[in-house]
Length: 82
Image 1 (tube, rainbow, N blue to C red):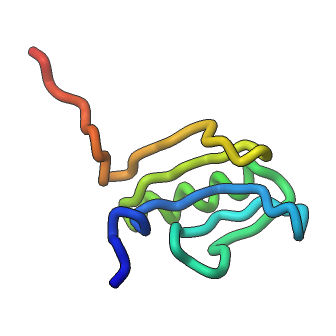
Image 2: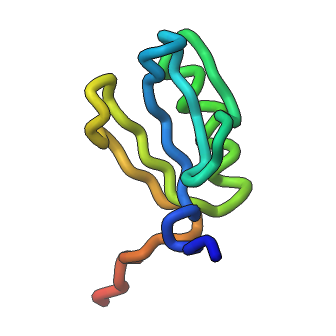
Image 3: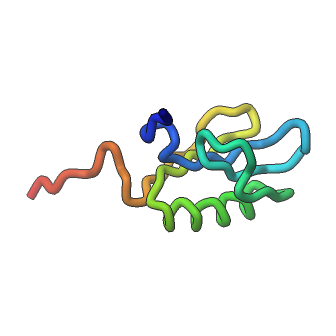
């Protein structure tokens, strides 16, 4: 059985084999989108992530997460401290 917590995110990473950026859902075998520039892949993957209400993890070329955005499934949502 697949753990939903591990597959409820999309990642933008650099593929060293193809020398292209890719947007891929966690646990997927194939990329949802690929491109020559990080920006174009981030933009396309962000739309998919927003549509599917997943976390978006944007990695640098070295693999480290540079940015993380929640699209409706925030594990730590902000609180209203009024």
